[in-house]
Length: 340
Image: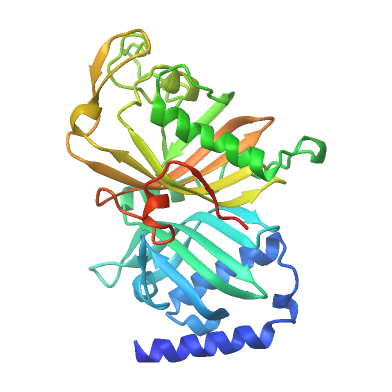
């Protein structure tokens, strides 16, 4: 660890040297995304000096504050090909969902994993680094097999049609609010072609298998991946997600209509598992024991509607906090705009 601290000191010195040079200028999309690639390369080399860190830069991994050079820095071996960026030039922040590879028990192999990463850049230096590492090999392989994000994610929104930062955040937040209340009667701003991916798996619009009957949202006792985004919400069968908290909106890309969030979904169990559907049926569903999902979620929003949702999920200790919020904010369902 001492050698890494020396490398970190070198990285801080490097950051000071380049401030005011090319890295010190306004960081555009290419610059922000370049920081991500350099950061990942530095982790592969286990060498923090290869990227410029500001003095007192803060680093967390899976909600835990660590020394820069610890955690995934010890085990990352190579980068995968998949990258879905949300580059927030105005705020100087960039967030990404991507694939990586790290140490395997067999030294001749590598273990695929997912990473959700946020970097905050100021004056050519990284001042904050936050990452979620999902060590689910099947999920990582699914995401990597997609090769690249769906082209919709990269579409530019015409300037006259671009929503404000606040409008984009508030539209994305309706997804969380609608799911948490889930009475089937909320404001669900989904486009007709809305689609959701979770850990690389289709979570909506899945074709009905041959020989089977498509579940009816009005009679089913559990929501189905065969339904549309709107059908899932209008069914009221997501009610067992009883608390969606620490809603941290960390990057907004107005040019592409993208919003990146870190959030926690709580399933508290007990009485929260039993609820009434919009048509008055009583249903019991969801995990039997307390359960928390730690989630990075990206939304594509155009014309006030959510078209695409992509998320990485990892089960964590119930009630876990992000390492960036106060306890009160971490347990709250209010909007936390931390982009600026």
